Length: 117
Ligand code: HEC
Image (cartoon, rainbow, N blue to C red; front, side, top):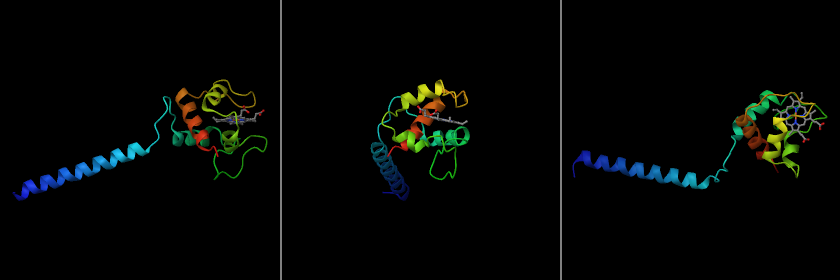
């Protein structure tokens, strides 16, 4: 076997290893629901739009005392991403109407859901 062919084979083998590593990784990830929001993006939105009143993550020092923290919301037995979406599409009078897009609401829902105990 020539030197060149041998290195081609080594490259092929590396690709195969990489490919199966990726496969194993994607198998380890949970199957995503149909309208999966992006929790990391949701945290960014929460820090921008919600942190003035709500404590949105554990690094935040202060929010309004009368306002539930996002971790509290996530722990409520009746919390789910659908009711959050409905609430945010038609916000509580004590909350400003932030005109969030459907995608932003999905991301916020995914983020808050990720805080559930
Ligand atoms: C100007 C202050 C303010 C901002 C900004 C704000 N909220 Fe609120 N939020 C409140 C207050 C006050 C309540 C409690 C209302 C009550 O229980 O009467 C509340 C309650 C909630 C609730 C609970 C509703 C329920 O059913 O009890 C959710 C969910 C919520 N906020 C989500 C959000 C999200 C998501 C954002 C950012 C996009 C946000 N809020 C931004 C003030 C705010």
